[in-house]
Length: 583
Image (tube, rainbow, N blue to C red; front, side, top):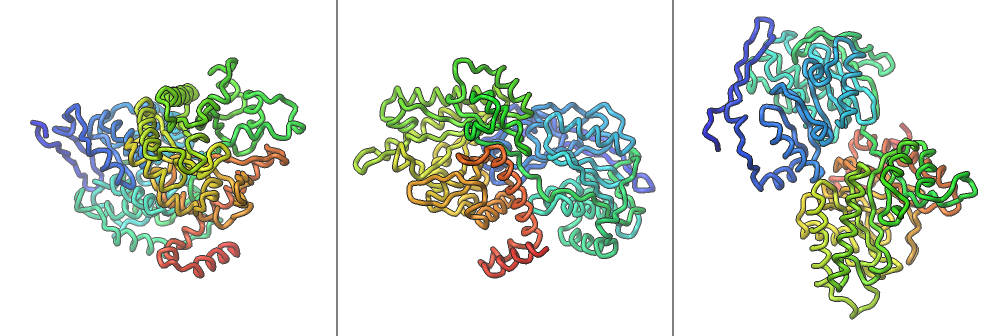
């Protein structure tokens, strides 16, 4: 509590429903230099954080950082104080939403035509924002997705066909879009849902009183679809120019015009760098780290490279050398994965010798330093040695405590990185791993008790552990920071690393469905072992197959698969899969 008057907003309403306003910040601008420790649990329990700009920017930045570290999506409404937004803040946002005048101020560009708005939105995206949602007043909205595609939503018919009061229309639109997004609706349906909320808001007086109920929006959305259904192939084209109107939803626009795009944003994809050392007879280059990066540059659909530390960082490897190699290949660094040398054969973080544990922690911190230098924010810790071979060999309690402490030290050294434990039940170097299952990994995350601590799930490791990857994903939830895709036959003692979905296609489809359901925000790592196959073609197959299954999973969501899952109705779910194939 601060000794300042409450903030006020004074709205000037014109006869045609147009509004202008004056905002007196009051106590909203007088936040103390302190954030309650309750912030983390509050944010962590949220499905999404929606920010606006009537509080100090440092408060928004603090909340966005917290949400980002916890895997909670962050939407930024650009309404409020007219001030710059930093690249750091934009990089934390899943979606930033300006209106036309705010977009013009953000970029210094003219936004009077469709082409100008799109260029301005792409400029904002280039600064770091994943998705840019521009409200266009009487012309609807435009969404620039993370993949660079455009979805256009025309406004729906205002109830009563008269704009009474525009106050709160933009707030209604953005809040409704956020709600629909959290519910797992497609981006197109989310936009239509938001347009209906905005139309309801302008049809009556006031700010808070005009906000519609969920049932009102659903009713209008249903009737709007029924009265304005159009064939996808004959949807009207978006307007070529936009007026600098406010958040009004025009009563003159009756048709729904949506440019179709992917239902969900497909994650960026990285690949196991060491796979590029296979079938060198098909490659004209060498086998150095730089050569392997260059070979990955030929893979269609690949965006990222995941490096191993210290394996890929020899004496002659410099940050400039790697950055140049990545630039020339058209790739970026996705993550650094720890690979501890053999001196840690009795354990890295679980080693009984204090000096070796400290050395393992320091090595991991150095790996994090390299991650930052390469511009990525993920550090994956997998230790083949943190385990044991025999009964009556290890002090399990002491080993666990040492692992917890070591992860705490790494998390505290790099609070701006996502630190992940990659669990695995068994390995040739340790028959029993200390962190052997999703449950053990989640317990570790809880005991480490750091907001930037999460889990890397490897599908092959799940199969080895006898786990259903989808159930593990549901259990881990927002603490799922990373994913390695592969497949295998689960023969005793074998980690196959086969191509994605080739052995367990239904299992793979379900896990992609659950990635969408928990709103997974990380990238996908292809972690396969192509010994006989061309690794470039093999990786391209993995990417295309994953994209195909991702679309199927999205389609099943739209068809209502979740209702069958709630009833544990396997037969209806399988019949739906058959229907989807026929469609």
